[in-house]
Amino acid sequence: MAAPAFFAATAVAVASAGTGTAGAMDAAGAGAANTVGTAYPARPITIIVTFPPGGGTDLLARRVGAELSSAVGQPVLIENRAGASGNIGARMVAESAPDGYTLLMVNSSFAINPGVFSHLGFDPKADFAPVINMAFAPSVLAVRADSPYRNLPEFLAASRTGAALTYASCGNGTPQHLAGEMLNQATSSKVQHIPYKGCGPALNDVLGGQVASAIVTASSASQFLQSGKLRALAITSKTRSPLLPDVPTVAEQGVPGYELDQWHGFLAPARTPEAVVAKLNRDVRRIIERPAFREQLLQAGFNPAASTPAEFKGMVEGDIDRFGALTRRIGLRAD
Image (cartoon, rainbow, N blue to C red; front, top):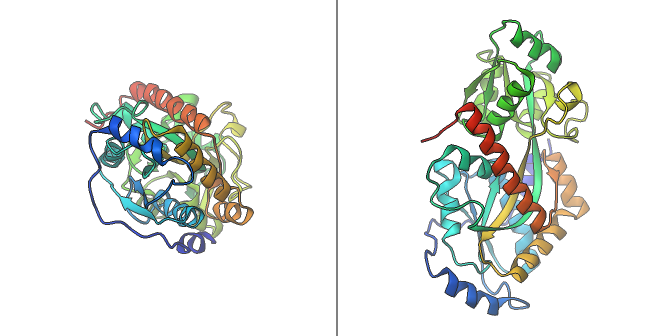
């Protein structure tokens, strides 16, 4: 696969662990307005990633960060602040100065957390200024190659007629977990959720026969699908994935309106000047729209996107509401 080559080509420096700049946001915001224009950025930009190093979201941040550094002529530092399902890093950015020098790299888990945690320590809608959605990453429902189920309708029909079927996910409260629950609710199926600590362990147990299926990111499953060890039954996105063009979507197989794409984007602290947000959006958009970079994203399992700040704001807030309603229906709580 081309994904390792895509992710290996990074020159982003890794910042040492530190703390956010809490308080004085209004004063900082006023000062930030004076830095807008040709002077911005005048010093390094830090991207806080709410996941450990090595995962897809982290690696995407590093690759885009390397390109952004070249574009703006300043270092772009990556700081991993994993923990509490991403809430630690998100709170750090929410409390940072709104000057464009601290950004938050998130995926759809950011929109799930408000529905499963009682106390986030920040307001996910009010405390951030969406900058850009850079890419979608569809998930795939996969079974072992020797599974008797060859398509999604067969798999779901078996669950409704008494077969004790299970699906592994990348963890409780992840987009993959919710993708399975959305499928159960939309089809009156009864496939039992088995959470794992990451997509890799989930795939291992499908390959080993401990669970009947897995819903994982398409990029993590593609090597096993291409080698014939796994069979893909459905893609969770609205349209087929360029990485797996022969795999039909859930919607194509009798579940109209079904869609769950895991987005990946940048947020800034609330009250970051609009001109700074616009410049960041413009610079990142140019990176994403570069043909060679887009092709690298596709080969790595991402569907490139380059939203406006307003479009990303609508996406994030819409998913907070959508996922919140779903987590309430299924009674999913983390505290």
